[in-house]
Image 1 (cartoon, rainbow, N blue to C red):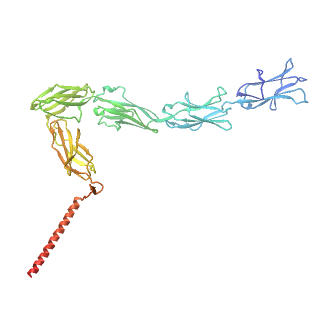
Image 2: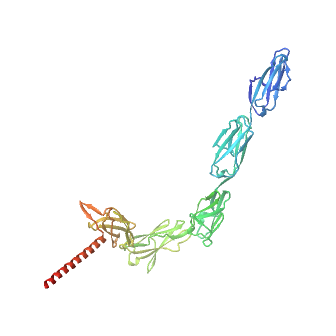
Image 3: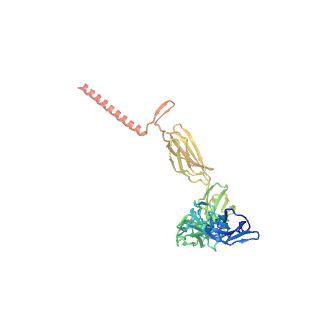
Length: 535
């Protein structure tokens, strides 16, 4: 029994390694009074005993700290009062739990690559029952693990499938083995993670610069902050996805993690990024849009000639490019005799629309438009010409292409629109049937794709422009569609044979020569007969 009087059976425990074991053996009866001894296998451990007043013999044994060699040790208590009979005995076998002796992560402790899965193996030995293995990243328990135990139960192996990130660099990765039955039995192995990763970049304007206050001719600089492992071997800069290099002529200075732009201009506006490369790859920063404020400039591609009849109001649109876009405008009319301020106009952002009415022949000339914003005033005005309105000019440079069996493509260039909005008209006439086959119009460009035509047919194509004052002279072209796949076609049960023009010419020449030969032969025969009559 133990010190509390609880009776033991043959197998006791399990006790944890290091526990105290206290065994009590009692016997009563027998004459003379028996001696009571404790044995471990065949080794006598204790032969001291006490006899109580009631005649009970008691022997106690204590093992202050159980060790590994005590596993399955057999302790026997023997009672004997003579040398003639077999001693009476009882035994117990001690079962034990062991703490892990060793845990280790296998392999070389090399730097890991971010975002690349890695498989790590940890082995623990010496635990009974087998150790439980857990993986930890800092104070965070990791989950993607697989565990297996050797047949003898002595070795526990745990496999961690781990995809590191750049944020894991510097964190402590550990493998922890413990016997959950023994408090405080955990031991661990681990190391500080060294993660290699593609450079991570952050781009910003210089600390003293503000986006809203950069104007033309200011100096600007960018700072590229880099976080990388291993450190970068190359740094680059891009503007609108095009590489930038030092060019002192244009005021571009590249210096490792800094980019300086001297005296920026309107064309310096756009998206800037920085790049960096190490053994893991090339990283690119966020893009920073450089806003350069500038005074208004005329927007290219505007309509600059306006036609108007006398006493007819014409709306002239002036559009500028500017930053900021809050623009005020002024207008002026010029001709050979005078210059006048135009006061009838409305503004909306970067667009101003003036309403002008020519009343005499001297009211035709040029309108000038200037814009201004907080940066400054427009230096060169936008110039618009007011001319008497009339019919448009003819279209130019017309061509017919892409002929198929049932379609053609007609392309022209527009002529002067007469100062008014014009549209373009195309007519296709079938020469064989003497009728209009197709009529198309286009409000913007004189380009037409004509479909649904008869194959192997000849057509007359007419193209002209028209506005509110009339129509232009027409451009006339002849064209044809390609013949069908068969050279002979049957229409209305009549077979028609198609001959090429070259074949017709050759047949005509041959027939002509034959005819001339026949005439010569006939003439010679007539002459021969005439000579015979004379003879």
